Image (cartoon, rainbow, N blue to C red; front, side, top):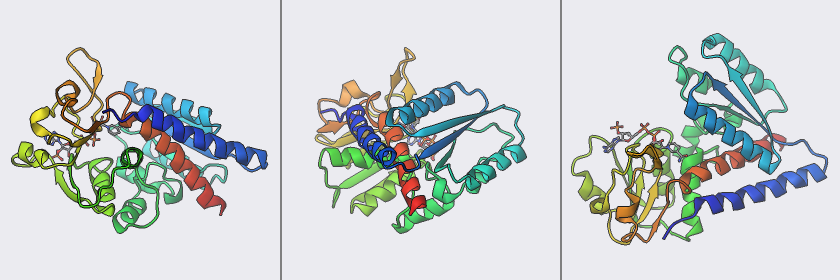
Length: 281
Ligand code: NDP
């Protein structure tokens, strides 16, 4: 059965909309997200536009700062420092990837952890590691919401996460561990990947390879969360999982599009609202 991320994301956005409406009714300040986009990367432009639209939908203030591809690292640093000190700004997101001449890690480390709505700052990463309350990366958080949606209890379950990136694989592994799952993190050097995946009650596919996971990777009845945003042979958006091949043997699967993708944006709005409440306290 499909897990309808689009629908769940809409529900979460409507809840945020109500909360913002309430702030408005009370004459309070409205939360604000600033997205910094450097250069002309086409995919990034689409992602940023979607974030802007989502903010408008829930009534959140947003500003897109478009900087030229040739912007100097120092100039970008100054922009972030200014936003860190701007009392009206609750969330700062630097759209990745950045041009080669800019040191990505250095830039992300500069964002005030309280405004780090992507959850990539080392302080927030450490909080996630320690199980403390912080800002959690959006895509992994969205996956947990989808598991909640199907009332799936991870306690004691075998979760196999394929992919070990800092933005998806590692954080989602920690979230599953927090929920008492037995977690295996697999990657490109994993031996016998098929056998490892076949153990999974929950298979999380996050490798960025179109339709890689066929049914021989999937245990019948498993829950499959497909993070991939890939292009198939016809240049159509698809996931890391061969949906047609596995759909009849899984208990649940997130489709692409319409699965995890929409959740990421909803969680970005939730993080911004959380940052707002934390700052207002
Ligand atoms: P990265 O490229 O940073 O990481 C990919 C990971 O997959 C690496 O750990 C790599 O291993 C592993 N890997 C690659 N090929 C294989 C293979 N054949 N077998 C086993 N492991 C493999 O990707 P991201 O984590 O950033 O993204 C993963 C996918 O999720 C992409 O399709 C991306 O577009 C999508 N995505 C979707 C989001 C959404 O909102 N839906 C948000 C973020 C990402 P190694 O470390 O050994 O190199």
